Amino acid sequence: MMRIAVAMTGFGGAVLEGVLTFLLVYTVHVVGEPPRLSGTGGSGGKRGFAATVLGALAVGLTEGACVLSAGSLTGASMNPACSFGAAVVSGHFKNQAVYWARPMVGAAVAALVYQILACPNAAESPRHGNVEAVVV
Image (cartoon, rainbow, N blue to C red; front, top):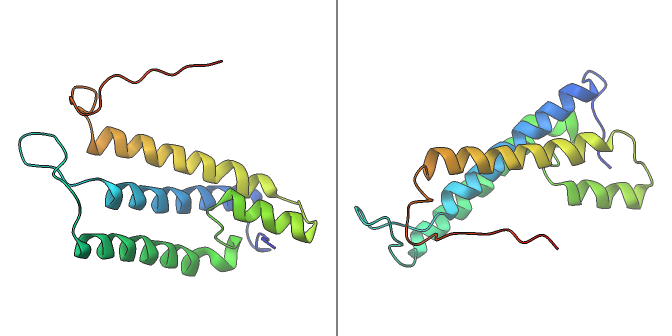
């Protein structure tokens, strides 16, 4: 069951959960990007074993650091699904907006920041093409 520490406010917990989720999702985006050939902007092929292992290690170390730094304050959930499951099992739904809304906002901001900083001209790249959203 996730609980906010007594010394922490709901707003402070929400901001902390958003920042932790931002850090984790941004790390996943960075290590999950396929390698590029220099100058072509295209995919450079498969990742090697060492790059895959180092990427997984980077994500694991980031999550571990987030849990160690904020676990005592908010539980460091960083995942709305885990928080929801714990709330359903325990029947304790107090302050669940902290664990649902802010991580979603943090993840969305991480995706936008990564797209703006790491892929500024992705729309011009021939490998991405045009993407259309269809709403039914």
